[in-house]
Image (cartoon, rainbow, N blue to C red):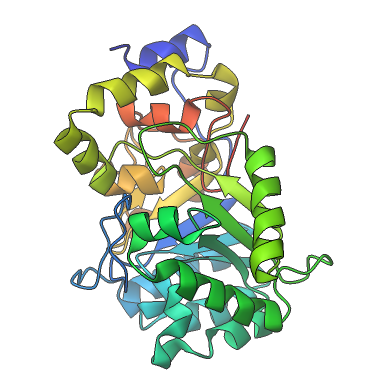
Length: 318
């Protein structure tokens, strides 16, 4: 198989480097109320990795000392971390944007039922996983009954103002394929989601992001178990797009692990590939000047972000 760095060389992109840090993505742990089949984090109810308050405070210190405009909080279900609400409040007090990556169903947990109002009160942008606009594919990925719970949670969010055309409280959905194939054109499936969710359930959202399944975590286990890993990798390699490679999210994002280690992206984090090539690898060593121009750690899994129109935490990149 063609090595990813060779593809970068052919596009005059090697070595791939950061062009700045616009997003500090903070993974606060792997505890989750769901155990989704495609989860690259391999999160679930039995996971105990969790960011301490001390590490969360170090993340806030990074924001205080820099002009990074966005804090993107993820997990697991990030809402389950004891420091989660404190972090949201702190980031907003600094005048920065907060994005939270939610599985939606967490809002139906009795102890979290006030989340929609908390999110609205703090102007949180919500990026929510919703694999499809019908129950079958969604429940197959995420568990029986998850689709129905997700729709109920979206209605709760709509009721406090999320998904409105004024864009004041933004709600975005994330679509990923249910198997070993690339997502369809983002604009086309967004139109399908908007039409069908509106017609069937009367719910609204702002936009939809398409993300390719990364060949890591539980999806890698699925590929290995079905004997489809090589076929899927060849599909990604054949669809490699230099334009997507030039705009991958790691060039403007820095990822922080639950233990305070630094990564070029959330996917590298799950592979334990910390920042390297002389760049600081932990919050304790943080240097904005070094990290904003760092050389990015790459591997074969990077084809997942550069196939077709490309994909990342904000959907297509090319």
